Length: 255
Image (cartoon, rainbow, N blue to C red; front, side):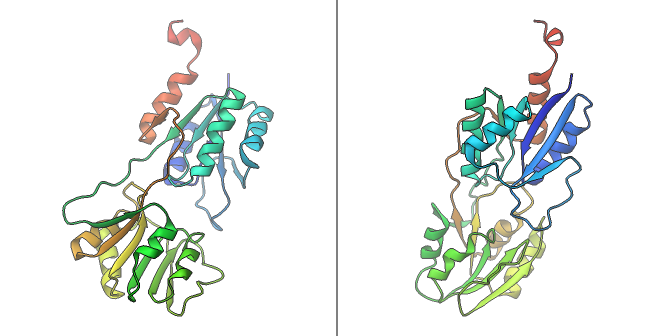
């Protein structure tokens, strides 16, 4: 029997999970991407791109494709997608599991200022001009047009188009992982005195946090949004074990 699994992705872990599950002959994997990245990394499994049309659209897709398991492996800040996934799973009765990467913890030497959203982060920069490293998605940097007095270094996977409507901004195209030594050099070369970041968790983008700590640079940290209460795992390995348990044939479970 083949089990149809839909993975809502866009993260490194989603790609790793898809590759791991695709090795099983009894799994049919589809990886869904939101389509926000112009040149996504090759995934190695069938991919669909673009939205579903909210929770109702996702529910209709699950029914149409006879999906047997929904895995939410989206970014920790993709709160709307996660909410739609939980709602669609509830409406259709399709089991759902979330991959919830743990957030970073504040360590001795960290100079974090925690805020609830990107708009609050722009306000937290203060009135005086500062040299700011924006390590955010390109869709979110427009909020900083409200604070045009600062110099901005903006890093993104795809170009920020149109550019930020501020008088002083530099743009850097790069895709992680980003190591601490390289991040430290970047912060020093650009004379950065404040970093704006989401608490994404994981190792791939932690380098800037460690580098800021080492250099005594302030970090304005955007807190994570509230996410639906669904069964979850913190690692690809743990989630894969849950999937294996869920889809084992009845006779293997001793039922």
